[in-house]
Length: 263
Ligand SMILES: [Fe+2]
Image (tube, rainbow, N blue to C red; front, top):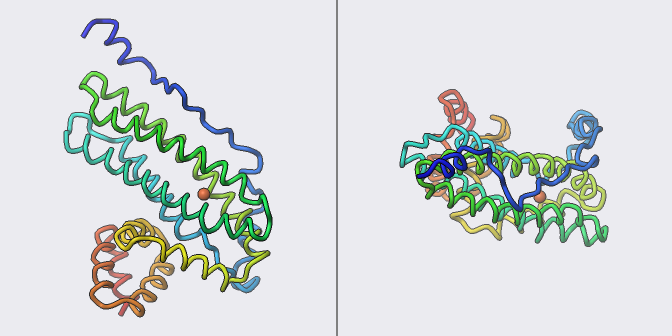
């Protein structure tokens, strides 16, 4: 490799064609804490927060993939395969999630307030483009020659960090503004019906992946409620499969707490 190519390999990553999206003022709902307080059971009858669990799972999956990418061992063939595969899995989750929101939640929003889903739908279109960009960079990083590897992984890391940052801001808008709109126009029974439609749409093998990210990354109390519900509703063998899938992702203390909560 000549000197110029070596210099290029060490240059700061440039990401042609990628424009991080400016976060608008509206991205931060300043009174979201008081709105959350208003939803506390003590203050008001608790309403169903349709985004809460799935977004907790997504935030965990995004954080995990980003941290793994940041600490990848570039000399390890195993890492160079497994870490990009983890990022690819995250991108698939993100793609599925935005489709669920477009098809079910945005449809519900448009039915009662035409135009109310446009800003988030627009964000989703930008996310789709970024996911495609990330996939290209992912393939480049996974197959990069040794001298180009550091740069390829650095580009990928920064792109993913920008994508995660955008998604965190976007999810907050959904959990504050969209939730408020949905609460104004729909009952909890209506929202649960929408949620059931989304669940029915997810293939069983993909549901296991969603549960892998959601169940370990909610509070002990939320996990207990969700898993007791599954224990009561599922055939024992199927529930046993979910339990075994979740356990490796819990700490020893969390595992013991879950066993106690399910007894
Ligand atoms: Fe969204």
